[in-house]
Length: 106
Image (cartoon, rainbow, N blue to C red):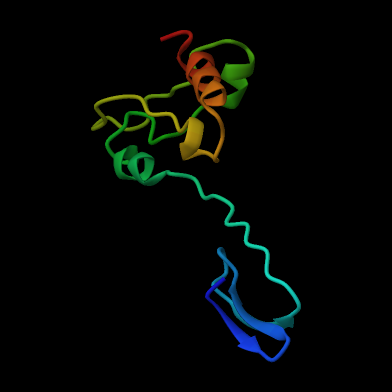
């Protein structure tokens, strides 16, 4: 939501879609704000080009409990996986589970 202004007994709201950026104006009786969340993935994308696996995981290998990282970047210095809040807003238990699942064979 970008703005709310009074219009008599109503409220005029200007809304912006988070992914497309498109805006629209609506006249409403009430405004209820739910901000939602976006992944905190800036660090992942900053490190991606420096990683051996370019941030990619072999999901079939994960399912087979095998090593999920492929060394596809000879210039890379480490393996990288996007877990926890870098994927979506979740609790600490989900992040720990992600880390344990991805790093179990390392």
